[in-house]
Length: 418
Image 1 (cartoon, rainbow, N blue to C red):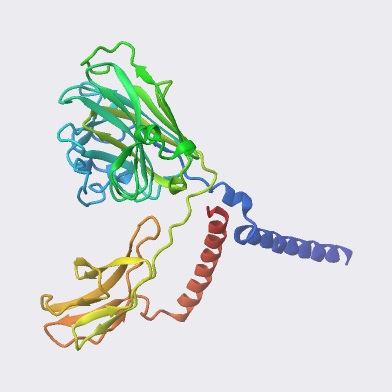
Image 2 (image 1 turned 180 degrees about the horizontal axis):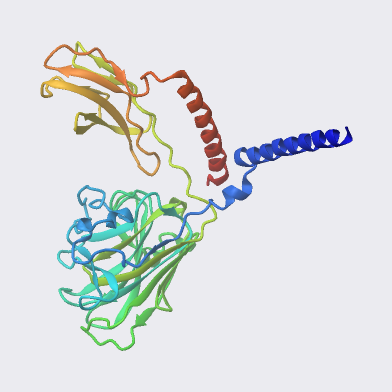
């Protein structure tokens, strides 16, 4: 009898222990997971040595290159504005000969004031970091100079100008073996201003400090290719930016302007250059993830069959709307879309809200689809997608899972919001 009591007691203790352990794990996952979340409160460092790619083709034709890097062309679009040199300007090649070390060879020497850039793919926004790369300056085709560097705190990841850009770069005139450090600022998508002119003009007073040095590369003569790489490094610590060529700080700048105090995109930029780039690394020094960019609300659309148009209410903070029908799409800036002149047929139409500034908001999810018939009787606005029927069991289970995921996401975002 005593043994039976002891056995039942042991079983109850084990059961209670299991319940308490499950409760603790649940609490850690939902409300108290400081240790688990803390390990994720930082972007991974970015590292690239270009060894994994096939040589020969331009990067936009190179398989898997767009899995790691991004610019307008790699995203499937076209160059914009000053980004005229994105296509057929860069390729992975061997540093010398037909084997050995692979590098990114960039040649955009033709034209003036046109730029090439690539940046890490995805939402790679940072505030404090060290970005570095090896650069080898070549002379063939270079009329006068080559420059290459990093664009930082880029507020819009669409093209080079973006808004509120800062570009720190090293420059080599091929007529000598010297490297100089430079920085330009682009305010609200406007023209670039040299930070040295701003400093000498006293525009920002003590909010802007600047010192510069010239680095003479050993063993290089005028009009010669560099035999070796120069290590170009930019260290960003809040409002201080230090640019190095090898171990020489060629530019040291403090720019204490709130307009630039945010998590921004980073990219490699160059102009009128014939260069080789290798061993790119961005070491993230932030102790939190970049703040979430909220998504716009999806439009609620209605089919006005009599007027043969789709209508919706204006979405706050939206600049335009992408109308998708069949395999085509177009952008409008009104809150209606006439389908009267579409080719005859049946279409599922969705509308996506587009932000004024993609850094402040992300585009919305597509609206629920409205089915229309052109050249016949309109369907009357049957909606598909979220309104379709789903089994009650699936819905109930989905709600539980969605709520759990939402709770976890909410906790995480509260912890990392900047």
